[in-house]
Image (cartoon, rainbow, N blue to C red):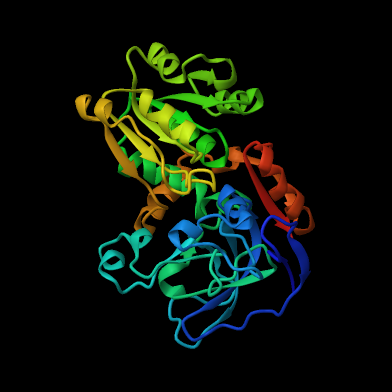
Amino acid sequence: MRAAVVEEHGEPLAVKDVEYPEPQPDQVIVETEACGICRSDWHAWQGDWSWIGASVPEGQILGHEPAGIVSAVGEDVETLEEGDRVAVPFHLGDGTCSHCQEGRANNCETVVPLGLSSVAPGAFAEAFPVREADFNCVKLPDDVGFAEMAGLGCRFMTAYHALADRANLRPGDWVAVHGCGGVGLSAIHIANALGAHPVAVDVLEDKLERAVELGARETVNVSEADNVGQEVKALTGGGADVSIDALGIAETCQNSINSLGTRGSHVQVGLTTGEEQGQIDLPVDVMTMQEIDFHGSFGMPLVRYQELFDLIAQGTLEPDKIIGETLSLEAAPNTLASMDDYETVGIPVITEF
């Protein structure tokens, strides 16, 4: 089968023939119908995250935002069969640890990141295996398309968990979203759909325009702002109630915190680059005196998927609006490389394998 493989960090992905996977007893094989290209793939391709022991090995097949059809079933799998339409979260849990048992599979003690670990080849391929498939595969409603589900494995569900669960977003809240890539635009759309007032913050005007289409009430172009935090505070009447760093660089994290009003909540979604290596200076005195909360947010518990499906069925959430373009597997290397300059608008989704 064809797959896009990291042969050397920072060098173009190689699209080549690799062996078709065979399921282990607890696994299914999913034939990929759609897979998003995410900034996390870019980080992995660059060789980032060695500082947390998560640098991907050379030879890795990337891709962690998939939807597809079960094509083979391991002998111990009980709830899935060939032909099932499924989405797969990027954080593959074991289903047995206390976090998984308590409905927090995103915090699994032995989590394996799909497409970012040698034991979990990813979905930039015609097919990929899923460990503990009974636990990790989420069956798709029949009326939901594969492409719109691709982002649910990472960016869309990550944004939902960050807002609804970690920040406890309420209708009427002002939400500043710093970085309008795929997860940032997802956060804009979700915040608007849940009755909040999003403020989009980015350096590129085309991304801000897309954010307005998705529900942003206000925008801040960082390249034109003298002080991003003060700009947001002026637009929101004293500061955002919730602010998200959807990118993961020092500037966006600091701007996010400085955009908040008293007792506001910052949510860190973006993971850092080789520049920060996980370490960012924060205005801790201001955070203390204004009682600002700092939340980390990673993926989304599997038990929350049905709520997303219900909101999609009602027309409240429309994840297909976040799709920037659809493309072939052969185009994935160039699209991934274009993220060097933050050129992609919305979620690029591979639909031709």
